[in-house]
Length: 255
Image 1: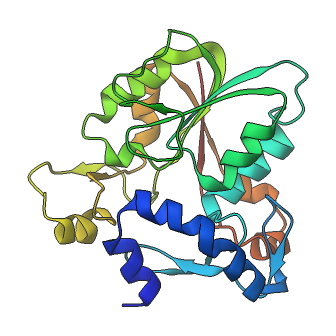
Image 2 (image 1 turned 135 degrees about the vertical axis):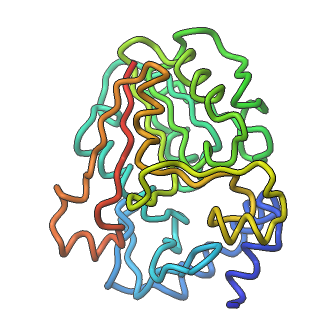
């Protein structure tokens, strides 16, 4: 097991988040180059870092923003296909379990009223349970909730809460770890051992592994769901330069 993989699996996430602010500038300086580029900040490197709780993916984690493939894909979609960065009207945005690669940038964005929420993250504004959000009905224009639902035992209730606080006509992006070869979601609440969960669900703190029925579950809550394979709109050389995961689906949801 690599040192990086061992750190991911043994050190609690809140501590990792705090530590990353200290080591990130050193790693970014050491890996500076021109082979791979993070589209979020435009910085280039000779390589990205490996990442993964199970089998590690090479060139997955950007040394500068700490973005992963899914973050860079979402950024490009928002930039090229929406008015998220250009709207002259205020966009009230809720970000569940905010990712570091977006946090400071979104907070500085003048056209956003930006609120972050999480039960445990030390960088979130509002400490709250996703199954019982302390927000009004129809409050937000945009909601981001990425790689969260696979951690939540009652994901139906969490989805209902996301639907409740999203405005009519609003947009949500709710990414999950994807196994598109799997038709049906698998969960088993009797599996509580950390090693067994990592073996079966892909990570020690996951409670299920979603299949393609994930999108229909969102639809059953009331969302209109677009299964967007945005990598098809990106040139092959850019997919490689930005270190993206080909054929990853963005669940873009509307109320």
